[in-house]
Length: 170
Image 1 (cartoon, one colour):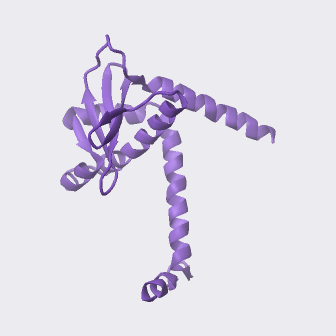
Image 2 (cartoon, rainbow, N blue to C red):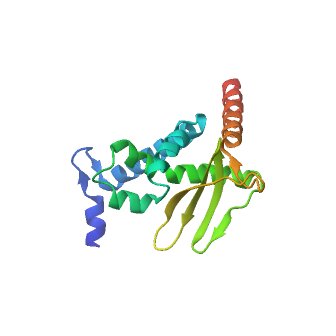
Image 3 (tube, rainbow, N blue to C red):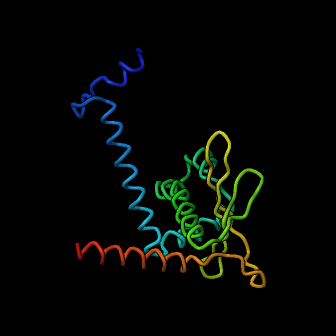
């Protein structure tokens, strides 16, 4: 009961109950994530950043990088590593819509994506919490089992354009 009383206390900064304040912050954070996801697939800039970043760190998880590298990492690197989750979610959404199944591993799954001649395994492992990972991998042209990032981008832009056209007619 005491915990509930603490939650309902007023947030001095916003002059409203803390619970309401937390809900508004959560909604705002969710909205920013959605906008970032849309922006991420509107251009190739995130994958270009990832290309440069994986030259230094060919395999990393969002969790381990943020813990071990936070002292020497730039603010941009920290922010972009956190967006690995959004990249995975965007690829997953595209894959599900096109009946493409993820590759399974011991603790989760991953998708193989490519931009140009660079391949990545973008995935998730689950345990106590979800951890997103990225591995830079060579592309086997004979197997052709990579999802082309440009295809994902094209589909997402087409959907966004059709929604914009639909909404402008309302």
